[in-house]
Amino acid sequence: MSESAVEQSKLLIREAGLRATPARVATLNLLQKSSSPLTHAEVAEHLSKTGVDKATAFRALNDMTEAGLLRRTELGDRVWRFELIGEGEHEHLGHPHFVCVDCGQVSCLGDIKLNQRSLSTSTQIGRITEILLRGQCVECL
Amino acid sequence: MSESAVEQSKLLIREAGLRATPARVATLNLLQKSSSPLTHAEVAEHLSKTGVDKATAFRALNDMTEAGLLRRTELGDRVWRFELIGEGEHEHLGHPHFVCVDCGQVSCLGDIKLNQRSLSTSTQIGRITEILLRGQCVECL
DNA sequence: GTTGCAGATGCAATAGATTTGCATTAAGTT
DNA sequence: AACTTAATGCAAATCTATTGCATCTGCAAC
Ligand SMILES: [Mn+2]
Ligand SMILES: [Mn+2]
Ligand SMILES: [Zn+2]
Ligand SMILES: [Zn+2]
Image (cartoon, rainbow over all chains, first blue to last red; front, side):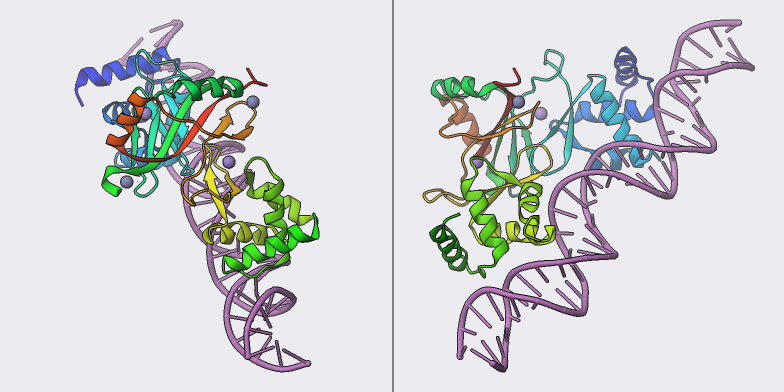
């Protein structure tokens, strides 16, 4: 992890109104490098190598989520996952995800849209802000 | 609950290879009348009125799910929900659901489809078997 | 560079949903 | 009616996440 990346994380954290502690900086940097959302356990295990308690890891994730730096979602396996909120992304309007029901692999998706007919159905239900797809990944087919 | 409905439930349960106990019959009949999937707690509370323990309610739901009578899904709020598998429905290929992130209301949806572009994206990911939409229901908008 | 203090952390205890062990009961068969 | 084995009741245990509290530390002000 480059020096500048650490400094940039510290800035982001402070801008969000939180103190830039080692646990938070490490968490943010870890999520920055990850291509899919990470669970509390995954982050906690990473941080534990530097002696950080899992309660602290969890609080780092929750606090940064409340502060608007991260997004927290539950993808159907009863475990919270956290990911960085991208530059242009709206805080509560995330991108779609895919979860493999066999191996548990999670993928972040780009531009998934409903067809016209489904869209009109959906407006009668309310405002859709999140799409989650589940199934079998190519590995597990 | 009509006599014939009870007898029909008993038959269904026995056909699935399970004993037709009062707890299971009551569970099946309750789910039959419900228009959206019910949680463990909701079913357990209903059954508790007739003296059924919640562990039994949980086992009734899990056992009938394993036996192929029910479908169990987690819609993002860390609680299992159960619904009858319809006549024509495939066991693992359910219908889409919508969950209101504000009030928690759950709706079963009919024919939600992805648009053509998203469909081709999805085949590169794997086989989609379930779609979950989240957002705000009309009540909460 | 030192100080002060609100915010952050460690550790253990707790919470909420679901599951499991085990002795006892009862469904379905003979 | 008796028998065999699945199902149940009750309590204890799991699993994931949260919280209380004493102690520590980031960082802003001297
Ligand atoms: Mn993502
Ligand atoms: Mn449904
Ligand atoms: Zn897979
Ligand atoms: Zn609502």
